[in-house]
Image 1 (cartoon, rainbow, N blue to C red):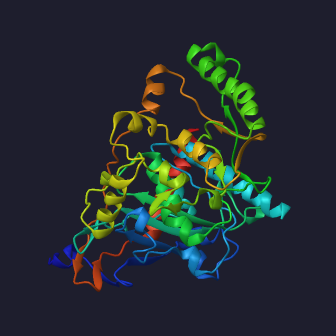
Image 2: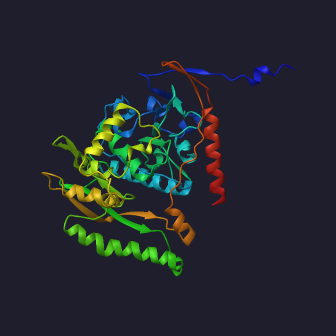
Image 3: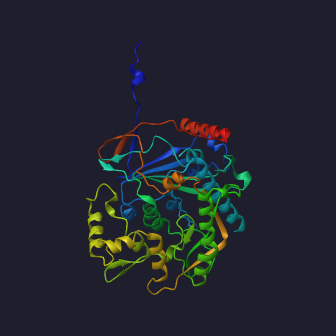
Length: 408
């Protein structure tokens, strides 16, 4: 029999929007059955953007976000940086956020696929030989999955949440994720604050207590006990005392909030100065494989001419502690009176390592090993794209979560 037809690949032509690869992907019907609102496109489609820009030039290069096109005012903008966390940790974090957002409203990869935020097989590596630097997925989800891997819907007070999932092509550590958050996305959304700050207007940043997830029996392990003691001493002695003076030496990146307007830079004598400029000083622009466009050349020239250049070993060593640099720059910002506070009643739980090898491994960074689907570009106006079965990908992710739940 003639089997040539089975080896043929159907392709779909995608028209580039102002030279940008943007694709709206249908959400599987099985997922929509769990949703209350299914009329608007933001609930029915997940939007994918192949970003070829650096974070600092994201908006200048014509990239935008779906939320901005709805002309909504962004009150709360939360960044969750991920490295190699498993589904349990991601579920616990995201569901905690969902519950807190629902509470605020009442006052006034597998996991992400099930939420509708991510779909396999649509990410691309390059556009007209220009390498994609970030994959941006946007979807307004109406469900959450708690730490027990049970799906929660509007019936359990889960409200629609606009989720932006930025998957970087290259792992460049947490500070680079914050560069995308502050320099690429925040200027477009213009949030009032980056995460809720329910305090005085001159408070630029806050942090809460990070609580080690453990039990009294586990404290018999000296590695666990030492970490538990470290967390408690920091939250009992250090931060409350520092908060009295309005300056906390370190706002932990794992659980802190900043007022966006306080982070803004300003030009002084033609040079960019401010908290964000100093915060990203230690991250070199050559993290990206290419440094050939005009924007990169301009930015490199600014770094060379900047008095805070990290060319010498003493200055470079100082900028290794970027969290401390950011807090110092906030309270010493020119013509400002910003303060930093510690909020004891706000708590976040963290799962601490229980063995020495895991403790060391937790602090080790490695390059991402991503395998993304290849596409072939044709001219500057369209791409030939192989369609995928989104429902099949959703079912696989859902089954994987179900299998993991049974094992628990």
